Length: 390
Image (cartoon, rainbow, N blue to C red):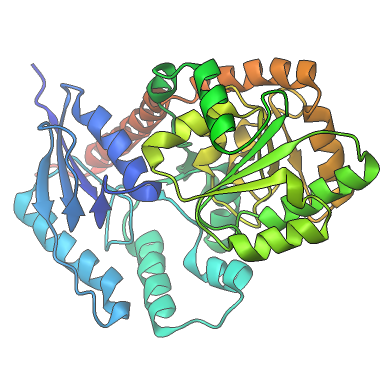
């Protein structure tokens, strides 16, 4: 019987929140359930979901802030070496060396230059240098991007063979949606926030209203109201943000009566909100993927997103949603929302959206990662076969 393959996974925080931490945990827990693998996670803080993984604490020097990335990389290298040898090292953060590097964002220099549009601080320069060292000198055999958008940006910044850069989208777990009754959710959520049962309900879910483009959505809805004053709709804004400022903008646009802010909600309650809605809209300025898109699709909602959202990979134009290339084009935003307000259209597209979510399960993501692991294994065998024997 073949020995188990020993896998080391490096990430500063594991399974504590969403984003990279949640992504890594969802994949790693499933890989650890495969009897072919023995999985070790090297992390500073973690929330363990099962007893199948061996955890190794990695210290971090948190102050001054610019030492966070290099200190994690330095201590991770020592801990991995002490617990090794490993057949494969898979990192979800900037360390000194690895076989596989999952990039949950975009190259740091690009992010600061193109998105934040600020000068590089000492923290930024250190973080960027750590990333460059890993990509150029860290021995990575494969790179994983979370979307075609991030893959394209990565390849524009680094001279890496495109064949070594694959896309593995985040997955979605449909189980939380299956335990709720849609009609009950529609009644209770709508009653709670004063929304008529027959009003088409647009959902926006975010903890960062500015980056996720709430202003773009409001302006598009304002345009729709001007075009067709009799058209009924409500917008439910779920999450913490500048309710006062965006509420004022909604009133200025003539849609103050149509917009409801819920404030922050517990993550485990979000499926009920999705199930109460009719369509989902997020016109982000930039988003490497946008898990909320798959979450909405899992609830059977067609989606409207901007072209700067990585999840555009899973949107089939006119089938399960729409992608607006320029979210500042309020006429196009209004037209797309107008189409989705048609009950027959959104129900048909909602079925397709739910099917899309099913095609993007965490199990499907794991299969893609394991295929990359096999590619790395073949590379290692090829290199070994070419080495001179004593």
